[in-house]
Length: 292
Image (tube, rainbow, N blue to C red; front, side, top):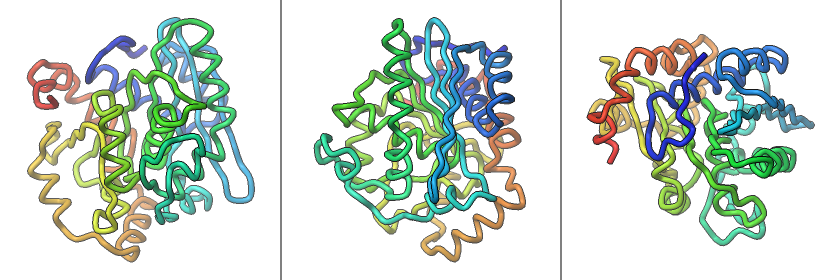
């Protein structure tokens, strides 16, 4: 069973491995996921969310211990149209059009925003019950599309008056961008110290939607380089991002690579394996200093 630090006040490599594992478990069917959550994460009170309609296709799970609650969103499944429809609906929309009581915090990715909004009612009801039952810390996570939905959920818990909840940590893996620069700046100011996003080697998904479309980033960025070393300020990543990626023709190239099983983007062979190899360093004071 993996260790977890439910009261960590900043980055924790132990929590990164735990939440990456939760993100991987989110891809399983409900029965398998529940067994893994119990055996690998030591959590109970498992709830599986499977929310579908003609275009919506969202899966996630929530689970509890006496000390913490975890909400993990499933990532992109290439065989399901709804997932890629959410990914490709990159036109921006105001956050307050989705959550009308929120103040004007800027523009978000329409596909991710509408997916979270249309799935949110049962999820926030579960979260409210879980955090009212007893004092617990709240951790939200996801891989790929699941990471984008995790960030949207964190934004909703931060900006929507009907959903305000204290967040202890948001960890994402291979997450695409979720909003334009103004939104990302406000989100970073709100939860930046508790938000950590990983990119593994030359995973292309964190590069879309494109910066040329005014999409931005939030949270503390951690790049696992080609040498396997995690860095907060990665020259290799900056060089990689500098290569132009500004068309959907290139994006569909990403999709085709994912269908072939691009290792760098994979949650198990890519992110979890890389984090596990570097766990001691990720937990070191030396690495934490690079994030400050």
